[in-house]
Length: 353
Image 1: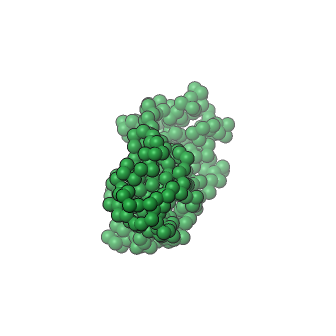
Image 2 (image 1 turned 90 degrees about the vertical axis):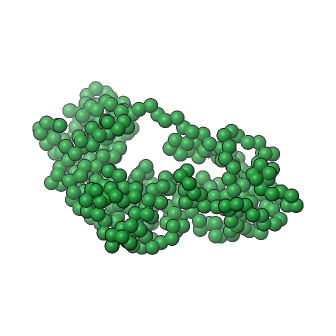
Image 3 (image 1 turned 135 degrees about the horizontal axis):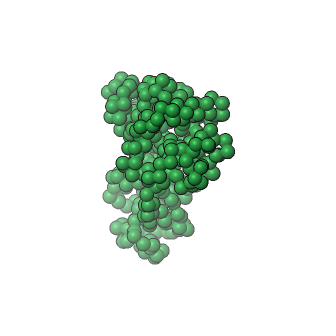
């Protein structure tokens, strides 16, 4: 455990910085409504605040309460989420909204255990909701907080290892100002975001400068330490946009792969690049071709789409046909209807939406 003198110094430094220099503004900051706090925290998982803020405002306008979110159609929610990525978060959002609305009478659990029982809520999110909404003495531990603790206290072990993360959780809990958990948690997260930044930290204006291990040893760029990077997986996706009299074939993605719950055109996935003549041959897609007249409308250039641990190389082949064909799992819809469906950002980029 940390010495009392160091804890007092650390808390005082964070809270004084927060009082005198923290001007970071966010629409959910300082509120007590657990619904809005939960919504913001789910959106900010793996997402920058600048990107998430617009989505948050649009969601609150469309779904001002957890009841309105729970009663909305899945397509409507996914459409509003479109482009934010990590779509499993949206599935969890819908499931938890329904549980809170239909089973818990619209009231979020007021204990750590209760919050952890909600789909998509892990230790960090439970601590954020618990401290901000209910004043529970729970310490948050996100990337910003881990960076601050690693640098100031000189934690050199890789923070993405379970044992080290557990150590960080204990340190964060030990440093927490239990009388003002919401204020302290928000202050240290903001500090990590605007002063102790991943790149080019503002050490000149840091209240920890004289005692910060990383600053004293020139290790800001090396801390927090992480294990070896995961190698990116490369995937080759080919989309066939089949069109007949203004209608196109699409399906809703299922399973546990990327973009679950979103819609897409006829898909072919390969382990290596394909030649154009292969892509224009219907039999290679498992589609009937006898007696069908087709006309190539457009063949796109290769589009590269980077996900966290995946690099997707994609190409679109747009072909018009003279009659409808049945393709298992897909259905014909008008272009206007498809525009209302939630689609992966890769597809909307190509479509220009």
